[in-house]
Length: 232
Image (spheres, rainbow, N blue to C red):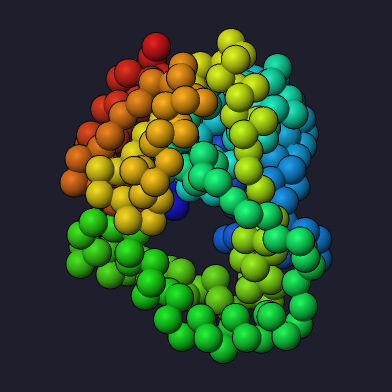
């Protein structure tokens, strides 16, 4: 997901890490509730293990929720927060039943696995340029526990108003980046709330891009990230 940006950051001399969160990629599929706190602590523990005292965090989509939680739990390790197409500012009606049953998993696999990979192409404004993306996602379906991880993550989504208010009132500098044609996280749905609660943000819109602007308009995204945000 972050390969292009990660490789560019290393090329420019940044000391960079990218991580697959639990239930994604090559990380473990745990038999636990997939909460924001679980993911945040995964990152916090990794930094502790590597003896990294402070870092700038980039969070894409659900990763935006994770970096908000990191800043709330361990603000002293945060230099900057960079939200990319983040779903951390949406309103949620939390599920009262957090556990995921075998019946739910089987139903999800039956109904969604045949189409879920192709549906990832909705992340792009111009999906015809990224047809390989569905094949990459298909690999994830081979791993036991992936369906449960997706369902558990959805069930454990809660409003992060408290965490985001804390960030806005702190000394942490934070930035929001959006694709101008994102149909997954639709900016107009929550822009009024964002303007009321995250008043200290610096905001950027990437032209000709959907939910993954760092992939769809690499030049514009990297110019903003490396020439404006990280050098500021």
